[in-house]
Image (tube, rainbow, N blue to C red; front, side, top):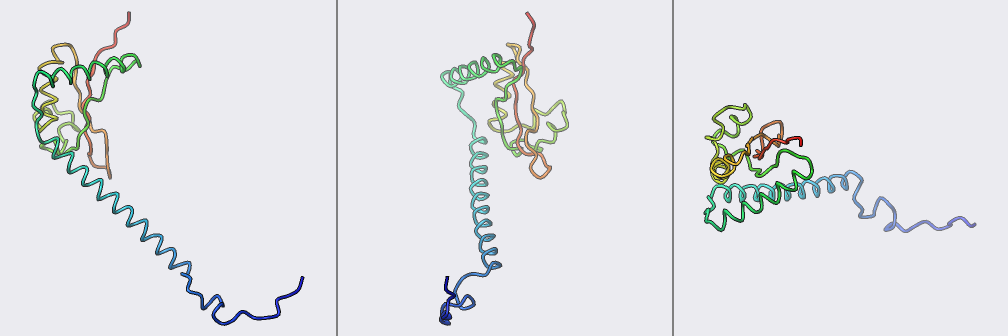
Length: 164
């Protein structure tokens, strides 16, 4: 094997090439990652704002809508029971749907339902009018803790499991 006897021309030396340095490449990568994170966060915030807007508007409970809700619940309840569960998450919503940001729910206060607004309040009323008389319980709890603060709240239908 012969050694290279010619030197590369000045325009081909590494110092003169127009490559990014490792530090510049690292900064560029960080900027790209930050931009993607910001885009994801912006989309998530827009989706959350849209969800809050939707949940703030009541649903018209026509007989047809009540029937649809009941059929959907019965289907999910059967599946939960077949899996041996005695509770079912029926609604999840941001803590801002409570007038106190979920404080009463987090502290297991007796009057927590009074803090519900919008569709979560409608869900509670639906339970109280139709499901509680059938023996179902309802519990609410914080199900998400972003940055250690209360986030989403879950409403769970509960029932007793009896041994036969």
